[in-house]
Amino acid sequence: MERILRVNMADRTARFEPVPSSYKNRAGRWLTSSIVHDEVPATCHPLGPNNKVVFSPGIVTGTPAPTSSRISVGGKSPLTGGIKEANSGTGWGRRLARLGIRALVVEGQPQDGRFWLLKVDAKGAAFESADAWTGKKLSDVVPALAERFGGKDHVDVCSIGVAGERRMGAAGICFTDREGRPTRYAGRGGLGAVLGSKGLKAIVVNDSGAADVPIADKATFDAGRKKLAAALGEHAITKPKGALNTYGTAVLVNILNEAGGLPTRNFREGRFEGATKIAGEAIFAGNKERLGRELYNHPCSPGCIIACSNTWHRPDGSEHTSCIEYESDWAFGADCGISDLDQIAELNLLCNEYGLDTIEIGGTLAVAAEGGLWAFGDGKRAIELVHEIGKATPLGRILGNGAVVTGRAFGVPRVPHVKGQSMPAYEPRAVKGIGMTYAVSTMGADHTSGYTIAPEILGVSGKLDPLDSKKTELARNFQYATGFIDTTGHCLFIAFAILDIASGFEGVVEECSGVLGTKWTMDDVGRIGKAVLDLELDFNRKAGFTAVDDRLPEFMSREPLPPHNTVWDIADSEIDRVFAK
Image (cartoon, rainbow, N blue to C red; front, side):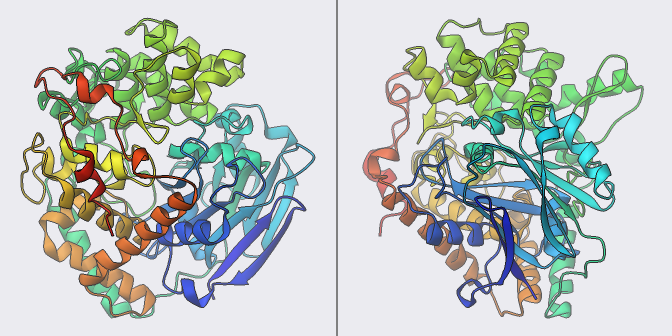
């Protein structure tokens, strides 16, 4: 029987309860947003006792469905003041699903200021002091915890770093990868700070002795699984030794640079002169030179057949960091004017160690450069500033609370954000559809809310002109589709294949029906996606959000962006149409 595990940090109790009938078929983002919407007061302080952190594996997480080991994390965001869902690829959610836990809800707040560990296994849940594990780098904490509680073959760990312990707005929630490394992040929105406010340092899940995830209709599930696997194995972007497996997500650096949509030096330009030095191709070539062999990428989580996670190595062949995603590469590279991969890798590593969102910190550093704290391109100084965050100095606390706080502290008006969350690696003046996604997303500026880059830049599902301003329907439909994908437990990257190969999308729906015993069709995709977004929009309205919050920074409407020399020119009335009732 699937259950909800409810953990109260005020009295350190944990209890199981049945999944309510109203949540019967909900999982992943649909369930996290449902619980946050229904249980968290929209006007509460994000770091106060009334906020909650909700974890939920997707519908097919824990099954043999390909590329489906995602965990959704929900709560009220300290950065935006609105609802947030962040997710990660990790075996942690898979183990939770195998234990029959549809959702894990962390609520309440301790009064003693101490931190605790939560152990979850087939016997139940129990607490233990985390006094010995606080204030340390995550690489000194997580592998040791995994070994203590059963070893990485049986255990995955969810944890926060020192940034989360100190409740910084840029703090993410870290999960272990397939090798037990603390490298996989539900990074955005500051949910690590919320977990820190709960006094919960880590959640260790051991699924030894657990049963397989039940599948109501195995024939339907297997048919869908085969369709999706075939589509992923065939598509040029997702197939073995395809674009993602070879060059990782950083393959996008050169592509966006060529399109004039790679934000450079705090979104002042759309092309970076050092792009070829930091791109996925450069990572592949650099590893080959340092290791003496070609190194293809690895899966971030069990069951992933796309395998896009890279590892960067030092000149002596030792591992430096994993994984340098496109957004991280850009954030510390083009946005900060840094073209040295070793410096970018060190910044990425430090964020992994301190528990920080790389996108928010890269954007923060760019704003800090505008404020005179360092010079664009000075990677050594950028590394020193991230260490300030790790040490929680007064300056570090400002930087650790994100780009908007940093802009206010240093009088910088050019802060690329929406709803308080720093913009990711796509320039809205050069790629108008993603700009609309940033504007109307319930999560603040977030490319994963509706990845219109697929058709606008990559030509997936038909090529669209990125400079065309008529993107209202596109923004809406992609956000609804994403709401559904985030509910399934599949990685968003399956979208490349399923948008081009219809049988792949059919397969995803059949997998879900097979697990749940439903009779869903393709028509249910939009229905479910809309249901997810309606919950999130309603929460934000209750939190005080209005149409004014669905706007890009004003400098983008007046400053032309080289090389296209375009401005953000989509009318407010058009933005308001995306989710108009």
